[in-house]
Amino acid sequence: MSKNLIFRQLIDFESFTYTYILGCAKTRNAVIIDPVFEQAKRDAKLAKELDLNLIYGLNTHVHADHITGTSKLKEFFPAMKSGLSGKSGGVADKLLKQGDLLQIGDIELEVAETPGHTDGCLTFISHQLRAAFTGDALLIRGCGRTDFQQGSSRALYQSVHQKILDVLPEDYRILVGHNYEGILESTVGEEIKFNPRIMKSEEEFVKIMSELKLAHPKQIQQALPANLKDGDI
Image: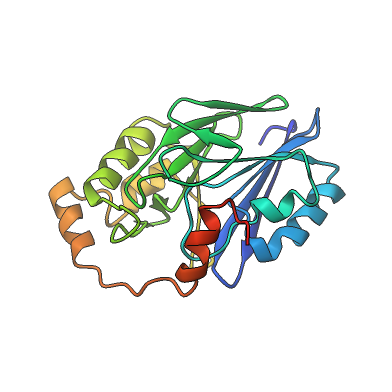
């Protein structure tokens, strides 16, 4: 990893959500991706210890399993701008779309629309870090569910292939929104080789997803309304 980058991966053990801080060592500006409300104080403390100024707080999608920490983090970083897909139906300071570029000091984040888990999913790509922050679209040896929040198995299959697996180099890191087995990250090459769902044919994938019988997330009734309002509770 370049010495000009500051990178931290954090976890919320209640929802097993991964949060990421990516900062520019030169300007000390930074972005936080998928923060969790209950961990906002922890995240702000770490950023300040690292002498980082959070200028963006981004969500890969409107989460159903936890409340985002973007609104809470503004108490510590009042100038921070939140970001969310413009197709999500939610509120944010910046409504993002395919091809948008976010500048964080000398770091550039490219926005890719990867719908399917929800209709407003985004992947953030850092070519300097050689990584894709995929949220719940592409998981380690799996993918996000598609049975609510305007999910679509076909859209997920196509977007993950067209925006991630078929276009990024195989050494690019896959930094996901969740993992329940303690695995921190993957790579494009690993997922092409080992992902048991997304590397099936599209028809097989749609069938697999249709047969999943998953309970709704425990916090869905609280999380969805709050996250549509940028985590304002």
